[in-house]
Length: 68
Ligand code: SF4
Ligand code: SF4
Figure (cartoon, rainbow, N blue to C red):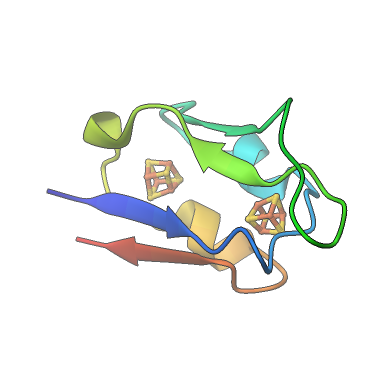
């Protein structure tokens, strides 16, 4: 099963991954911050991930690894 793994320590909360996910299963965590002070991206429904890797490609900090 495909899944997207987000390294929250690296994420800067830019939201680019959220905007490109075709399944709309990424969001910025509203109530959590990482050590840098950003709201990190998180996966809302891992089972719905199709492994397209759009999120990993667009992330400017390579914070997302996609397993297929
Ligand atoms: S791999 Fe594709 S479907 Fe899965 S979270 Fe990333 S953009 Fe969304
Ligand atoms: S594109 Fe990368 S840095 Fe931006 S919110 Fe998504 S995981 Fe974080």
